[in-house]
Image (cartoon, rainbow, N blue to C red):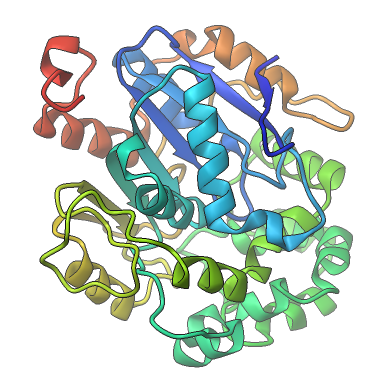
Amino acid sequence: MPKLTLSSGHTWAYVDANPQGPVTILCLHGFPDLGYGYRHQIGSWARAGFRVVVPDMLGYGGSSAPIDPAQYTTKRLAQDLATLLTVLGVSRAVVVGHDWGSFAASRLALWHPDRVLALVLMSVPYTPPALAPTSLANVAARAPNFGYQLFLASPEAPRILEANILYFLSLMFRTPSAPTDFTSKGALQAKLASPPSPAIIAATPSVLKGDALRVYTSSFQAGGMTGPTNYYRTTQLRYAEEAHASDASPTSSPTPTSGALRLSPILDVLSIYGTRDATVAPAALKAQRRFVTKLTEIPLEGTGHWVMIQDAKEEPRSFVGDGADPMAEWRERTSAGAWKDGSGDGGAVGRAVLTWLNGLGITDGAEVVKGKL
């Protein structure tokens, strides 16, 4: 079973598809998601010749779930991810992130720039390190669409989410054609306090269907919600780490920078986001364009937050089980080659990433990649 316990003491569960591939794509998921969230892209990218490594992030699925929020700072996550690459024999990887995984991917590029070949950020634009201390309350005041994060960071959030997991998932994974306000301050907590009937929840338009919904309910019922919500308790811890950092950039940046950590101006960055994603603020996109030198943006018209799954047509087998780690068999079978059975192209995200990498000269052919590696 693909699991590794690293020097940090954390155990990471992961998929390792096509390990003979000469170029590795490392995929990082967000909240509330799993490595399974990349199920549509794994086969597409592995069949294109890439090695695809997809961990359950810390706090999720088969990976460790520490109680202490300090274990979830992006500096610690970046160190674990760099160590994971080292143990797997990977010097540099194309790093793909979605939601919190996008933020973690950008911090891997800041803390360990020598490990990142190219960077793909989905649904969360690049945000530079803060110039001054801040709190989550201040963030929510400046960006009201982040108001829901105040509830997720609260001590009572795990208990409330666990008691209403089906309704919570129906809110998070609603299709953009059936929007509902849960992002403003107090809205999510108020909705969870008065859940509708099971029949209404089941009828809610969702990008999760059938076995895919069972995967998420089983995984979060087994692992709980303390680990996943701990990411929202790290705002001030992350600032302290980044404020005391030495310059991790291999070159000085000619673009505007904040703090000592700088995104390398020679790093190619692809930003993918849905035009109907309520959590993507126009101000964040504007800031990204200011701080990323080699930026390509792909807005997906009519798509919401879940860009990896909304447009994908083929639904791979889930192999969902029971017990403490319901997705253990899926990770094992996918790593062993179950991805070969599919024919899907990974939807808009799968196609966009492959096209972009091909344009950069990063393909499955070692002779093409040589200049980048």
